[in-house]
Image (cartoon, rainbow, N blue to C red; front, side, top):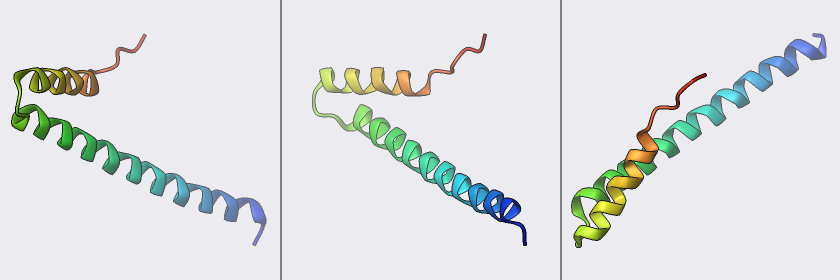
Amino acid sequence: MPPLPELLHDTAAVTAAVTATGGLLYGGVLSAVALISVLAPTPERRRDARSTLTILLRRRRSG
């Protein structure tokens, strides 16, 4: 088997694994910040967590 197709196959698998891991990590961070924004003991911390959540969920504008 020529080395290029094998290398491309391996690269695709690694890229998929890194993408999946990044998605899971991002989802975990969003979940943690959402919980903190609801369960934080002080209004100031809840407000800070909500601000952070807003930043994380902001859609990026293209263009």
